[in-house]
Length: 225
Ligand code: SF4
Ligand code: SF4
Ligand code: FES
Image (cartoon, rainbow, N blue to C red; front, side):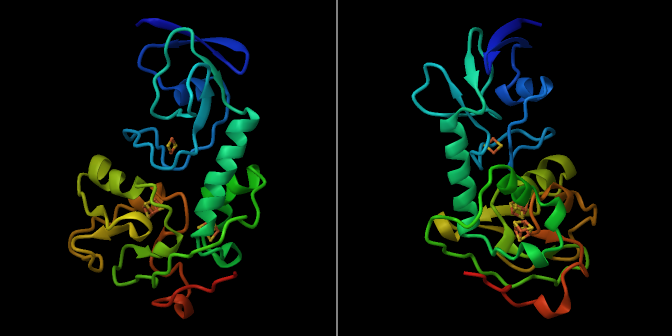
């Protein structure tokens, strides 16, 4: 194993070749927020929340998919990094349904926790919400895609961990959406009811049937702006 020396937040730390900046930081108790990263999956760099400053690099780099290199000087919480993370979260919330107070995921929602940690409140940007009716046709999974942040964790978990490959991302830009098949309701026969995608979802977009109240099923949720 080749040892690599890097400096994180002013402290020299030893890592090994092939480690990402995020892995080394977490191994040393440095908390970098992430949404699309999951340790057992290949990182895809979808959310950009894990950005850090690397000396000599013009742009901020995604720590979950950037390997450490000898002599790297990294700053994980500089004012520039924090401000950019805040903007990323604000943009996510600008298209989000914004009904935390009636969301079943509320206290365990990673998006909400990160927004709180970064002291992000009402987005400064004009909001444009994604509206989808709550889909409850499957006995195994309820989907409220108005809470989806397109992190792809469900897509990758179902494909790479479970080996079923039920989901994919379809459409483009603001219309991008996690779909089953040709964007049809989730087919009961193919889901193994393993709950792996539900556990992987960092927001309230996926849940067990019965978790979402009857009054909300098939309707877009209340909008607060
Ligand atoms: S999924 Fe959305 S509505 Fe639910 S707690 Fe998280 S941020 Fe709030
Ligand atoms: S449904 Fe959940 S896990 Fe899947 S992409 Fe959306 S937020 Fe991520
Ligand atoms: S956690 Fe690194 S890009 Fe999402």
